[in-house]
Amino acid sequence: MFSQTTEYALRAIVYLAENPSPQKTEKIASATQIPPAYLSKVLQQLNRAAIVGSQRGLKGGHFLSRKPKKITILEIVNAVEPLQRIKECPLGLPAHKTQLCPLHKKLDEAAALIERSFGNTTVLDLITQPGNSNLYTFVSKNETKKKQKTSL
Amino acid sequence: MFSQTTEYALRAIVYLAENPSPQKTEKIASATQIPPAYLSKVLQQLNRAAIVGSQRGLKGGHFLSRKPKKITILEIVNAVEPLQRIKECPLGLPAHKTQLCPLHKKLDEAAALIERSFGNTTVLDLITQPGNSNLYTFVSKNETKKKQKTSL
DNA sequence: TGACAAACGGATCTGGATATCCAATTTAGA
DNA sequence: TCTAAATTGGATATCCAGATCCGTTTGTCA
Image 1 (cartoon, rainbow over the protein chains, first blue to last red):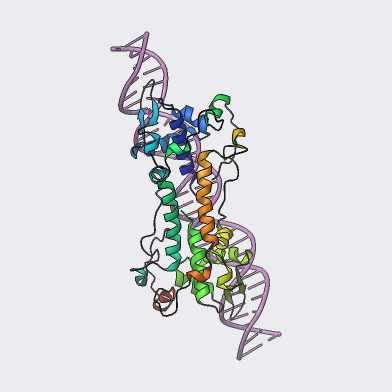
Image 2: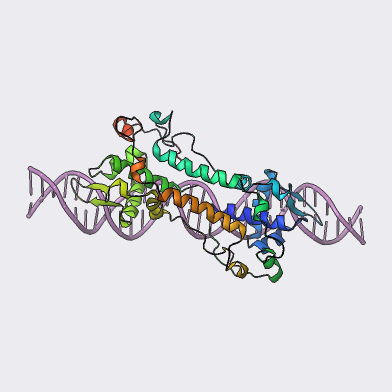
């Protein structure tokens, strides 16, 4: 339902939220099981959207440019794959100018549901409580790297 | 957010619901502005899912195999692009076996929202009331055919 | 200031979704 | 039973998200 890129962006952000110091692309990649070269592109998109910052050179890396509490899932999604609402009839029917037909009204409602849900959720809500074991960090320690489909 | 194919399937179904007699692929295509050859494939998928029936030969065409009231949007979506719920951690983390991490829990909740909404909506809800002008039929009469992006 | 480490940006490759084409098959009606 | 009309199914083409590669730029530190 969401693109692979969106999934990657979210995983990377969660990782950065759990690891506040600047993190290298390579490190994030292995921890979150994202192709490193592609992750690099995704991080660039998040950078342009002012969600992550980055530092070149030795000791450089990527980091959140705001506190997790101040970043919503919606922002992240919109940075890489804008959730588009249906504002006018996709068929361009004149009769639907003033009002969407029931079909597209329904589809837009679905988009609205997601938009609301994602807009109300911050990255803080996605961070696991310390003590709990469900951390991406788990992977970066054990370097588990089974290749697999991670379709969303 | 949904694929082009999904949009096509929904448009075609709505058209068939509004035009109960068997409709030729070509007719549906021009009315709903779907590439005819591709629509043919989509209809085949809907046929295999037992949502539409079809009749070959002279006077043949496609038609709903059930009353609009008995077909949900969810069924249609699932016929062409299954809405997939997240049942287990996409990264295959052992620690997430018993419980999804907050991220994937949230993403699955979003999928659940859509699933519920679409499951509760029938094709009948998408048909326009006779008298209202927001009908696809509008197009089939005037043969408006401006080529355009109809991305969802 | 030199050497190295990291992100950046552009070019390219690949596979799956989208789209097209056409021959084969089925069917109604003259 | 013949013909025209329609779907069906297979092969193929096109497009774009996803992924890779590599040279360039920016930065740290000794």
